[in-house]
Amino acid sequence: MDRVALVQAYRDCHFEVRRVQGGARDTLRIGEPLPAAVAAWLVDAPLCAFITAYNPRSTVQPADCNRRAQRELLRQLQQHGARWRPGVGRIPGQPWREPSLLVAGVNLDVIDALAWRHSQNAIVLVHRNAAAQLRLYGAEWAALADATTVIVAR
Image 1 (tube, one colour):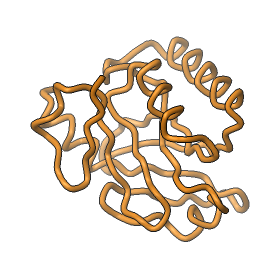
Image 2: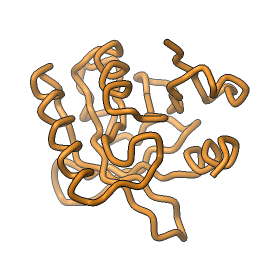
Image 3: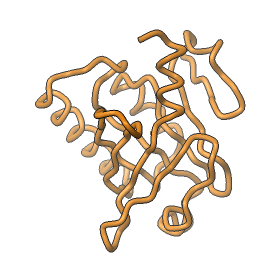
Image 4: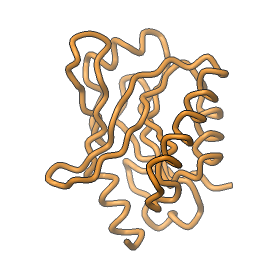
């Protein structure tokens, strides 16, 4: 998939997170504010991120490799004192699903370092009282930046 199509897929994605109680899910969308239940879960954290270790560089990996990478990401987040909720990225009408984590309680430098370490093309970042942003990792994405997309280059 070319970069333009891949970024459009990221923008079309529904980033679903399981609520603390009741099993219902809330959906984060690029360009939209946090759902009320997610904002309440943040408590006093200034931001949250929807991140995964699955499928580095959007290249499909075997299930066991993905699960192992995700466990390592969770371990690293816990070392930094992060709070997290399980989630899944999905595009409505398509079979693709990618387990993810909604993370709060760590600073943006930690989130960026983990995204780089796990070779992710993108994460979703939401500052309190702001719209969700797509955060793309690598200068090669620069031409695809817009009001809802931030490029992080090394």
